[in-house]
Length: 543
Picture 1 (cartoon, rainbow, N blue to C red):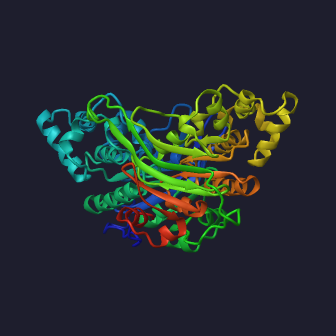
Picture 2: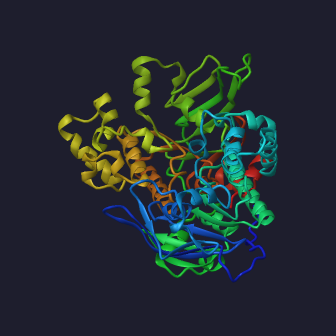
Picture 3: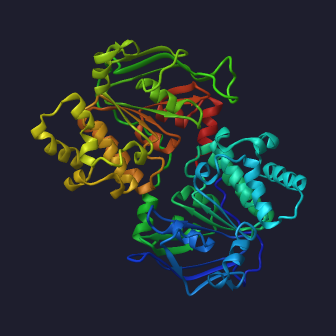
């Protein structure tokens, strides 16, 4: 993506479109956002940057009047076009939302209703704000919006349900919904965080184009300074509910003054093209070797052909040495997560073929106790520890699940063993007696890593383990993976759509596209001189 700095659209500079003065958000017991002030003019983009819990999203929701129950916002001024939103009747404020002010959320899969078609959900914006519009006219407007946000085959998308389209397409549907009435203010809460690099680049390019066309002001919530560089005119940096630094984007990015801003920028990764050191001097027999792996999901419903099913993997081959990391990159649907589940035998099908040799054995032929023992040496860390940790088990109980199943540690020593694992991943001893909901996202991921390490595996397969984390937490987790490899000689299969992460962690890389490996080799060589057009496309989209 181009790195040209954003250009503010021509506007009357004297009157702010949005003025927020001394905004505070509280619960009955705690202040979550304190004394936040900023102005936003027509055509400008203001980025609000900070880690999880900094108050970014609460600030955005306060502007939109969408705070959840139990939270109360107050401000000296919360003015839109000079009118204080705090004193508007609920009916008038609702009328503003979706017409003059609109919001795009981080995860369209949860923001969109799964039982309504995409077209109808965008139609609802017209049903609410222009109820007398004829159905035929509404449909035509929705189709035009889908064309405007560059959705392929708008007629088909209109009739599709959210689960039947890709993540990038769902985000475009959300943008179309937000743009239905040509809003003057667009509030975007991390709308590209969960997207592939290519889709992220496309969405940012689209939003910039629409802003220029419509003259919108944008309030953009993010923890990604790459996005800030692409979009923002001005930036406010938030920490623990307060603004710690503000100013023009170029100034914040190049000459930050606050220690917190400097720390965030220092934790932001760039593509690394320097070879990573390996932990062994000579090549040995590979720890893991896959040959000709193919996997076909059975045909189901209308989405796949009833005759052919869906080929998620097509002849994938690679090898991994002890104490090394192989990165697997590609867009959603490329086969990355399917590969992880096939390697661990979490999924199997009649349409599966190939061999997986792990520690000298073809694990696809193992059954019963032999498979159980093999799995002890191959563990997995999932993307979302919220769903992979049992909410009813204490952290100690979760970490000991595998130990208990395999009886690898005497019962009397287990409490000390848990404490040792927690210390290794940077958590206190008392974490063992607490429940998952009492920890932050980064802490939960450390717990998931501790659980994976409990059986002292030779191989850990990590599926997007840092994609949902703040940059500073992400950097800490990556250092932890490197430390584990150095201390224990653990090998990793590290799956990610973030090429920057892979460049800092993986010795070799597989580039996957439509179930096939289109390029593989040393990470530094491929990222510095890619040969395949798809690899070049992925690298060019990194912001």
